[in-house]
Amino acid sequence: MIKQLILATGLLAGCPSADAQVLSNAPKEPLQITEYHDFGTIRRGRPVTHTFQFVNNGKEPIRLENVAASCGCTTPEWSPEPVAPGKTGSVKVGYNAAVEGNFEKSITLVYNGGKTKTIYVKGKVEPPVPAVPINSSVQLLKQSN
Image (cartoon, rainbow, N blue to C red; front, side, top):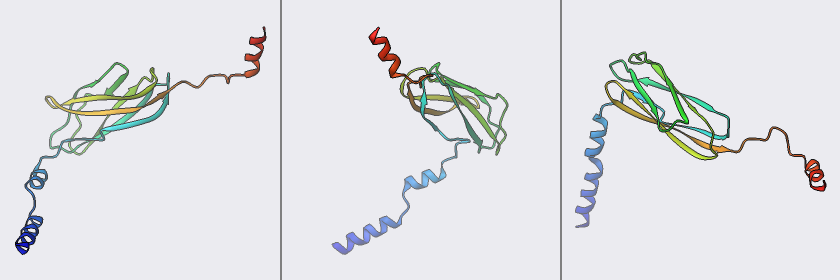
């Protein structure tokens, strides 16, 4: 019984799984792009931008039909010109750091007749740095008057 169990386990381990075969035969996504950009810590009131580069790994040109952000604080810019197979394109994303705290915003790319790809920007907004350092002597004078 133990020999049969060991033999069966060994046979199963040597067989490629159906899941692995399905994944290897799956078609590649034609629009290859890094899905996340982390701005890290930024200051409130200081807009930031990042340019996402993408590669056309397909056999047809990629035409970005629309690029829509999840809110008005995130602004995408892109070219309507098609990107030929094997070439690169870009989407520039701006974020207006108006509210303090952590954020994660999505940007949906619509291309080639309704196909979609979603990318994200994230980070943390901290209070702005005061223009002039606080002078404790001035504060002390104000309190005594």
